[in-house]
Image 1 (cartoon, rainbow, N blue to C red):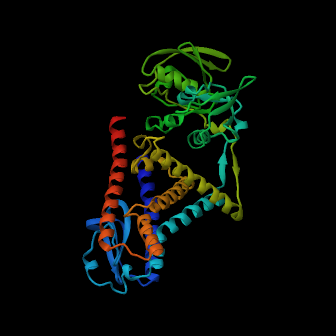
Image 2: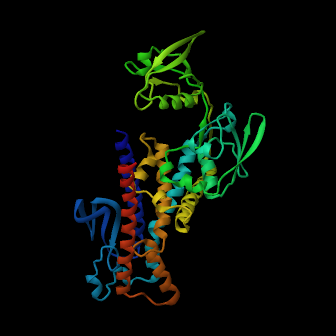
Length: 445
């Protein structure tokens, strides 16, 4: 069910973005009296799932969900339908329009995506605000996970600063972003009564970017392990545990925090082991056999029971600059990530992903705030990627149009045909490579 929810969110989000992007081309074309032959959501090689014709335009839905398109008369595009280009330009064709009009038509899609992305971030902040966990609430300090331990973090540490940035909102993504994108090289912590500066290795950003480490964590807030419910028939029930019990040791190792219990249980997965349980004023000895996955079969209180989050709320006028700043920050992070791939600081095979990777960002629960936030981010990324000066993308057409505006010379239709074909092959190769990585990771993880 979770996979269906992820796929459903991805399809809905992409459909919204594609339709609005193509409308950004469609309406300027119509305003300048340019004929639009087709308007399609998804591609339709050989056949379409649905179509109808209104006026001079065919509207439809294709079967290949890799994007969408509007087919504009007299324009060299990825369809490679160049027969009409052998004839004299007609007044309604793209190639007969002034360069500035063609430029507006080509920039329409990315303009819509930029506006949509920022508008959605503004709307999300205005409607929901932003919820965060103040670092001051994490009184028990952190649980240092596997990645965190490699840079010297220990259980119970309190993080004060990452580089020169105060750590006031408890979110490990802030630390990761400062390391990866702002080259932070120290992590200031409080350990007991001491304040220490941990050095971050120069290659740690590459480690964080590695796809093999995507599911790993630096740290999380520590909170006690309490049994709220025991599931009938599972290990905890068979061992005699009851709601309200507290496990105080596993295999002779003292445990108190949730993460400690999980870590010890995973070490003894499928094996009988001695545990001690505090029940009221009594300490009981039991034998527990966790499942092969290391689970106990209990339900624990939500971490929110131990921490009080805060929510920043915004009026509509306050949400405008905050939403633009948030969108710009998200876009900057992704642009920097692309820059690191190009410069070799990050490996494409580790950082790139296809539709499966994007779907996972939505999560297995349908939460509208998260859905619109991810859609806003994708809209800005789509706008930026389409602006890259690659033939077959909007940015490639814009590049050639700017050349025409500056020099007064228009590239020949034959040149545009070849350039578009080369660009299309490059884009298709990148698309296949990114999605191939997803398939490879799924098979060989």
